[in-house]
Length: 100
Image (cartoon, rainbow, N blue to C red):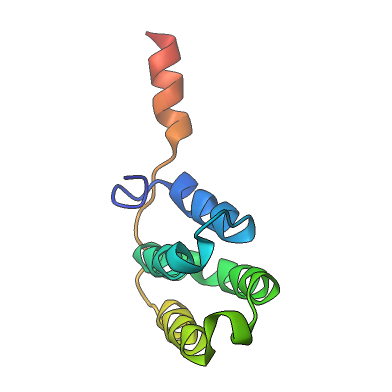
């Protein structure tokens, strides 16, 4: 929901979940990385961060070469993005809520 509505905190949450995978992380990590495409150029700075986290968390023997090849394709799509979407922050809505 945070990604769908382009909240910057959605990108932060994705990065956090990739850096701290839980049970089943192998399965949902590629889905999370793909979600970052919605942030276009804004996601470019996090690609090296998530790439490093994933390489530390999983070995090729564990997940297979294709897993990393598929992730590299997603990284490439993010890095080649030229779209910079407008993002919102939850902070604005929290302030409104508290102020009422």
